[in-house]
Length: 268
Figure 1: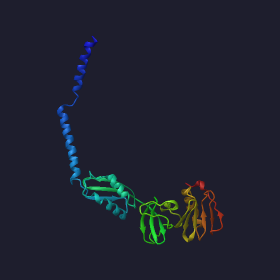
Figure 2: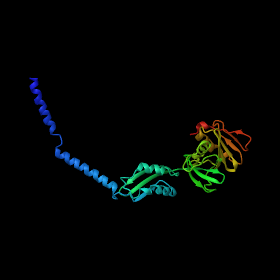
Figure 3: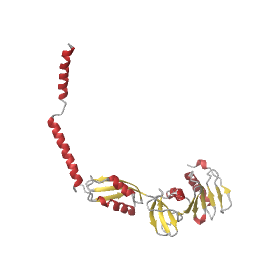
Figure 4: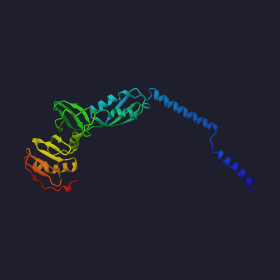
């Protein structure tokens, strides 16, 4: 009895499922639509229907925006669908003044660039040569002597290799890291120069006053401590030593020392 019933059930099941299967005509129409869409896409990539006619740049100062447009000019006339955004982003980020960029297609004819510019924090000096260096450590531009007078000077030696677009290294990089936070949160006195070694960081303020940070550890804490103490002692050629934040030391000369009362544990 079982062997006689089973085939009947199979036939009924197959008949039920067949009602949901697409017909041959439906498959043909779907395939045709797919081919038409693929053809239209291929045509749009090779015609001027969506050709790049305008490049817009946001987030950058005028001189950086101009440099970005110079890189992206090669995309003009190319279909937005055919533009290689990844390759163009790499090309733009190779511009020394650009930290990062995001490109997007603005149909029908616009290529948009959202730029994060490098943030200048110091000037490298070597003899009569000068370069602008960013918070990232990247050398972003050559400078005329005396330009950017408000930024700290970092003196380098002849052996230091300086290449436009490349990051600085070693003691020079340590000096850049020391002053980078001061662009947004400056000290009470302007920093005019920086001395750096592997174990010592010293910021030179107005009239030769020295802020001695010691090594690179706890930079944020040390700078915040200096902001609180400097207004009461910043005068002449003395110094403030915060290399040990728990025991800051100050002097009105570069030789003597007086321990400064402080409560670093309350600092943010």
